[in-house]
Amino acid sequence: MTGNNRVFLIGLMVVIAFGAGCLLGFFAGVGSTKAGSRFMREVLSSESPAETEKPQLITRKAFQLKYPRNWKVDTADEDYEPDHLFSINSSGQSTVTFVILEKSVDQKEHVRIHENAFVPKLIADPTRTEFRRWGRFEGNGVELKGHMLHIVRGSVRIFCHSGKNSSFTVIEQTNDEDAPSVKPGFALVENSFTLTDKP
Image (cartoon, rainbow, N blue to C red; front, side, top):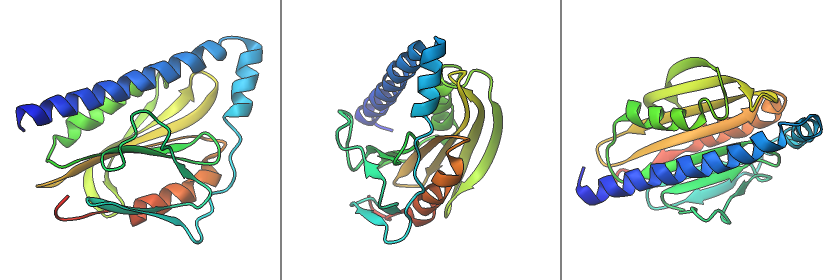
């Protein structure tokens, strides 16, 4: 890994961790009162079923994927970068985020970095299950399950795959109540995602 690439990667991880910290801090503050906790439960359970028929398509130089037609790419995010860093938000509060790099990386290290951004800030004491496959890709992954901000039960799945010329990390986040509506959408993204040979 060259110096410039290392700086870019470290900067990217810092931005993601900082953004996650700010968001989690806000929700933790709101959820610290009874009224706030009730409000948070309502906010976190506003999910509509993923519309997987006639899905939307993203085609970029390095990758391609499909996602439900009632989900949206978060182009308003100040860190949005369509080739390297973006999130697809469900109709409620669930999300799938991609970090795509044009280089090989240490899969276990990338999963660890992202896991540390969620534990214990989002999930204080989660159950942890490792897995090795996401869609058509082999790599390193972990699923974290537990109480999110001490309000609702949910899960975060983190997976990293690295090849010779490219790598990606994907993060899926939802709560248990919304999971039945969201999982078909996650499956659509997972099963349709492909990397090109030359990103």
